[in-house]
Structure formats: structure tokens, C-alpha cells
Amino acid sequence: MPTPDAKNAVGYYFALPRLVASWRGRSFGRSEHNAVEAYTVGGLVHAVTFIFAAELLLGGRPAWQQILLLIPLALLVWAWWSLFFYMGLLLLNVLRGAGVMRDTPASRAQSLFVGITTTLLAWHLITAGSWTSVLGWIWMIAVALNLAAAALLTLAHADPAR
Image 1 (cartoon, rainbow, N blue to C red):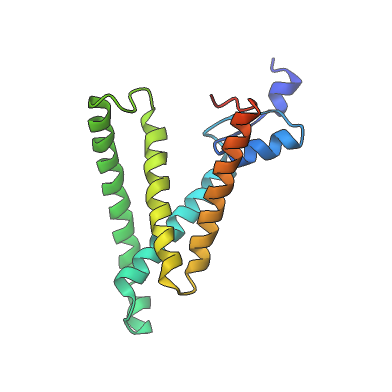
Image 2: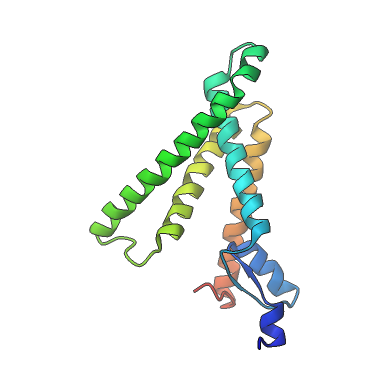
């Protein structure tokens, strides 16, 4: 039978929610099973990627063509992500062969690759100078807050993710 503390413990993948939980006096742990985090971050990753692709491939076209090409663009973005994850696994195998990231689980490495790529795409949205820079800034601020939270948790020795 779970203890009351274990029953009330919440697991978070990202450092920022773990930091907020610790400030609120709640018990917390690292988990990859938090649906709210998964949907929020996954939606933001896909929004950044889709808007980047729309600006890159549909920019300068008439509005009616842009609307007509949104569904094929969504399929193209899906195919790109499929290829991206495959190439990420190949890169991880090369890195492991070189002695780097040997103990890192594939899912953690893929998250790192997705985070870096999405950050680069968000940077492009910011520098493009259109309304899409707002989405880029949202991503950058979220990443900066999460990195700061990870540093604070590490300094406080309160991060059970280690």
C-alpha cells in the first residue's frame, strides 16, 4: 500500500515544475508520465516547427495558396520529424561508438536533440521579424526558465532527477 507521501508525490520531466513544486512544499520526482507537460511542450514544439516550415516554404505566396498548402505542409512536417528521429538514433549510435553519451537513454538523447533543434527554429522565428517572433520568444523564455530552474535545483541539492 502506498504511503500518503508517495500517493501525493507528483512527477515532472522538466526542472521548472519540479522547482515550483518544491517551493510549494510538495513532494516531487522525475517522471516521463506527466500528460500536461507532454501536451504543452509537444504542442509548442510542433507549433514552432510548423510555423517555421510555413514561413520557409509558403512565405511570399498568395493567401489562398498558403491555405491550400497547409495540409500537405503538415504531412511534410510529420515526415521531417520521422526522418529527424531516425537520424537522431543514428547520431546517438555514432556518439556512443565514440564514447560519448554511453549511459544516456535514447529517449533522453532524443529530447536533447529535439530541444536544440526547436531552439534553433525558434531563434529563426525571432530574427524573422514577423508576428511569429512571439512564438519564438515564448519558446526561448520557457527554455531559459527551465535551465535556471535546473541550476537552482542542482545548487540546492533538491533535484531527485540525479
